[in-house]
Amino acid sequence: MLAHPLSRRNLLPLGAGAAIAAAAIIANLSAPLTRTRLAGAQEADPAFSSAIIDALGLPETEIVLTADGFQVPTEVEAGLRTVILRSEADLLLYADFMQLPAGLSLVDATPIAFDAAANDLIPPGWTFAGGNNVDPHAELRFVVDLPAGDWTIATSTYNETTEEVMVLHPLTVTPASGASPAATPATATGLEGDLTIVLKDVAFEGIPETVTAGPTLVRVENAGTQPRQMVLFRTPRALTSDDFATMFAAMETGTPDPLWTQAIWVGYAAVLSPGFTQWVEFDLELGIYTATSWTIDAEANAPALLLGMVQSFTVA
Image (tube, rainbow, N blue to C red; front, side, top):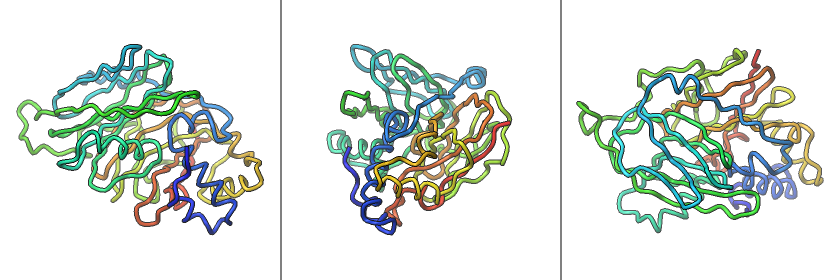
């Protein structure tokens, strides 16, 4: 995937060669597939689980990729719901709930949605309510809180040998029973989490130094001013933004930094707009983990992780 010129231009302080290499890495890592499989990362070990989510008893919505195409809903009720994301094909499946600006056609919106999903280029005027990605022939569950309105389920499919393809599916979210049509998205829903990760533009908040091992319901809440996502790695030690800048600079030599080659992708929560919350469940083993965000900051034109959005914690 081609490097994005904004990220390349704004990494020039790293040095010209490193900037180009870093931009290419960022562009590659922006898709869930390449975050899990390429760019020198040693391996992926998804840590998603669903025991806690299954016990919530929420309404369920299935987004399924079969050998014959997609099975997606066209209408759901507003409020909290469990999303079952499943690929029954030899392709990874990505999905995010997106609300398009009024008057934008699906044809015109598709390449913009692709850039948001694959290149972390977040378009102005769009709203993101969360999502995730799942491996071929696998299933995962997450929870979203959808307000009433016209939405789109943005899906993309890909694997190591095929290009990523984006398809948009219109979705009508009707008012919840007994609720007014003006019901809001709400970070103030009654569903808490065992761990709350707050997205604040260039930093994470709410992550403690130590998290207990085992199934954990993670509430990912965007309390900032820009859309952000969360990508979780198991790492050999605690990492900082400076560490990632150093890793990118090392690419100038053609040799990935050992810190990066030892990083293992374990989880993800797709792009989420300010004021929205999603819930994911992880079953984390003992070790050190690092949360990152790769979305391109609208003001700095640089990935959020190089602006400070990196935080590590220990699972004990």
